[in-house]
Every structure is written in C-alpha cells, then in structure tokens.
Length: 465
Image (tube, rainbow, N blue to C red; front, side, top):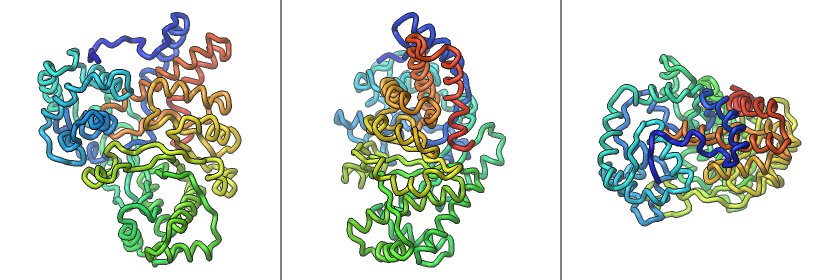
C-alpha cells in the first residue's frame, strides 16, 4: 500500500465516467458536512483531559483491533503490539506495522490507515520498513503540537456529536467536565449494561451486588429493575440519548412478574442452568425495551457476535482484542416478544445491527419496513467497508428505502479513523445513489435530498438528537 497526502480525489467512486461525475457531485455536497457519531468507543477521558497522545504506535496500532487482529493472524504476538496494556516498545510496534504493511492492501482497515496518514497527519512518504522510522518521528513531532491534541482534532474533524460507551455505574464526571468546557460539539455518554444483564458475563455476581449497593435497592427483582432505571436516569441527566446492548443472540422473552421474580432469585444465587440464564437474558432485553419506552432512550442491539472467541487471548489481553466473531442469529423470531409488546409504541426507537449480511435483506429491512419503531443499523464490524456498504444499500433499499436506516455509525475507538470512516460511507453512498440516477431509478434531485439527509438529519432523528 502507498501512503500519499495527495490521494485520488475520486477514490471509491465508480469507474464509469458518467456515473462517476454524478457521484462526485453528490459526494461534494456532503464531504464537509459535520460528523454525527451517535455510537462509538473513544475514551471520554482523552477529550476531558486533552492529554497529548503518547506516541504513533499507541494512537494508530495498539488500540485498534482492526489492525492488531490481522497482524496477529500473520504471527505477530499481541503482547509485542501493546495490546491490553502490555508493555511494548512503540517504535518496535510501528516497525511491525511497516513490515506487514502489504497485508492491509484491499482491506477497510488498510484504507483507513492510509486516510489517517495522508489526510489527517498529512504525510507524503509511502510506508515500508526503510521509511518507518522517519514516518514515526514525523508523527511523533506532530503529536507534541497543539493542533494534534484531542480537542483540537475533535474540532478539525468537524464533529458535531460524539457518543462514548460507558458503564452504568460510571459517575460520568468526565462528561460533566466536557459539558462545562469550551469544546464545540457534544460528547454524550451511552448506557451499556451488558455485564449487569448477562449471568454468563465475567463477574456478573459482583456487578449485580455493586449495582444494588450503589443505588440502595433491595435484592429483589423489583429492586434490580429500579436500580437499572435509576442509573439510566443518571445517564439521561448527563446527556445520554441511547442504551446499547451487545448480545450474542437476538432473543427476548416476556415473563409474568411472579416467574421473573423467581428466575431472578435463582440467577442471583448463582444456581441457574443454561436455560435459566438464557431466559433471564431474554427477559431482561425485553425489560430494557420497556425502560426505553418509559424514559425515551434509543435502544440499539448489536447482535450475532460471539465475544472473546479465544479464551487464552481474552484472559491475557482482555476484551476487544480482536476475536469477536460473527454467528447466526434470528431477529424475526427472537425479537417477536419484544415487538409484540412495544413495536408499535409511539417514540420507541429500536436500532438493529448485524454482522451477517443475509439478515439485512431477509430480516432487518423487512422488520423496519413494517414496525415504525425499528431502524436498520449501519454496516458494523466486518461490514463497515466500501464494498460491504454498497451491498448493504442494495440489500435494504428496495425493501425499506433510505429513510429507515440509522445513518452511518463509525463504532470506533481509533480516534483518527473517525473522519476516514465517515468519508468512506459518504463516498460509498454517493456511488450507490449515482448508479440509481444513471439507471433512471432515482431523480438527480431526489438523490441530492437523500444524501443530504443521510449524513445529518437522519441520524439526528433516529437517535433523538
């Protein structure tokens, strides 16, 4: 791969000259539009403290599991890359990236890396082992300047809204600091309660005990629900607009109050079997929908991923170390109890994300094409890539149109990749719309309206911004 500041201005646009001209005009309408990022994982303390980034390796490699997982597949030890807080020489981490640069050709992560190096860091020299030290030194020098501090980059990226992902017991002090700062744009928390809802989550018993203690609630099912509702209210007071749920299975279950109380006591005592734990997860996902109906938080479900596939890697490096892998799930049957109860509720917003491309056309788009509460989550994890975005548009548009989607979701903790990912989506959408215009399926005026809405008004409406 190359790394050049002067990139092709028509990158990712169609090769056919006529279609490319249309796509270019559409892209130029939104290229500089503000970034709306309603779901992501950038640590809020980076912005609250505005601490300079330590070095190029930790910024671009160690914390980006899109990058480290492919290096690991090539035989590079994750410890040597600084994954999971392991001590590693940043210059050696950088050299490992340079030595394996060819592996990223054609990948979405490779494209984003080139965008970060050329467009954000404004580097011209191609990346390879002979140039790695020079590039490292140039980036390191830039990171010491005010223009490359987190808040300055936030402003230069044109971010209007950035959501973080936060533990329910977080005091959100850093968010309060940002609210009182002079930072232009909103940084908002997201309620992520997985570890308090899933009996199979590591440390579930301790998390449950801390939740009840922090909220002063009794160890009953009613007390448990009240504790979760209290923490949601705390998040709402600090600007949260959504609650996110990462589940392996899109499964919900509607239990009566007596059965729910019995099941809670079994789970809290650590005595439930696999069926009990599945039933509890399913009922609690339905309860989260009930709470969203009550308090207005948008409910997002990222389903169909088996987290931490390799036990030894998880035990050494922790979560988010690159081995969350797709598995099939059934949205239509699994979410039916939830949608029977709440699918027609006014102002309930449910955004569904999948990493199985077949579910977009078979399940999620048809659900969004009927239920006013259901919205199609943007391509995520393995699918947030140019060709996959195009396939996604083809899969969902004929069933649900453009306006039942969530808008693009970058879902990243790699801060410098945020503008690259949003730019990728804008180019991919411009290319898709241009084809429809040239084929006479959408008018030029309609395409202009659609792309304008996709980058701003749509995600603002779906996420109640």
